[in-house]
Length: 194
Image (cartoon, rainbow, N blue to C red; front, side):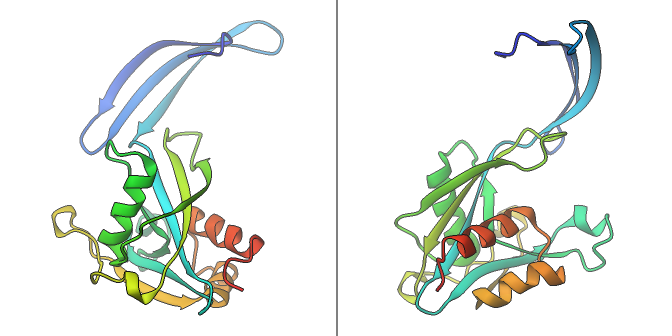
């Protein structure tokens, strides 16, 4: 750790069932120069990558639709989320990861992607950095049906929709996923589909 105003005192493993949940005790120096102690639970699931696939000439995007248990437990009555393709790095570099995930989830084989930004998605409790990409796609890149990996118990629907429709779905609440909203806004600002 580089910040001398924060000192990790203790890390206690609470769970490593799926990912890692630690209780971390940190001593920190306040603005008045006194020191205080906080305990926080920190969830480490690894870093990830996400991508928005867009087709400039058709003005369409490819998104995924799947059940997400945490959203179902928090007022999403169907549990279904519409999202950009994404996945954990699993020891790969972000570009290799997102090219692999794109083919697994959407059936499109990409040869090049463009990294556009990185983001901490929930910095108060989760360590994950998400590497965000965009890539243009066309029908010649379709090499499979997508849908995810059965070994990972994925059941993903692939949807191709007009960009304008996807963008309106943010306002209507049909798209509530942060990474998807950010990448659709990036596409709008940079006019990727017009």
